[in-house]
Image (cartoon, rainbow, N blue to C red):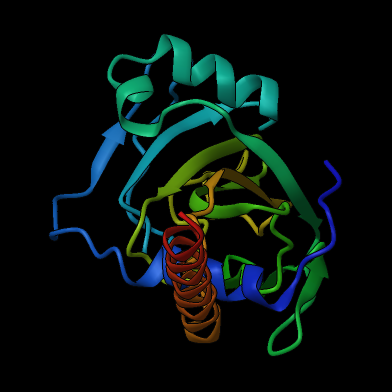
Length: 216
């Protein structure tokens, strides 16, 4: 999906949306449903819940299907998801690989992630996001709500290859939800300007009323 050009305020909106609306700490929630091969866990730092582990490959269609069919997932994660970027076979730290502002660095079965460089559609703010990890034949979705950081670490400890060993990361996919930005607050000079205009208008009306009285 292509996003509109981003003004500096949009980048600030990401930070505000994801770092100031801090939610109370809560237990990590695991979702499964049909096709689960083993339970996922909190192997991606900052995530509040996960869905999986599943056999196959993640996609936007699959994510939407899981949300609509897995018990409790629709209420927890909501709808309106967009695929932002996918990083295939990410490079090693500290540089890693970046696609559309989504950076992933891999040391094989662990590494780092960072979404601070993604573009936000005009008039929107980032409300929540999901990072999907794919390794060997396994994949899982890890959800982040408001109040979570824009960077962290990940591990493929939830996954197993054909030799029942922890595999290297194949790819990571970023999905995001956007919501309308709050109405902009007028700048002080705009408020002052409005006050001056109202004051001038009131003075002109008083002069006109005096003139009409003198004529009458």
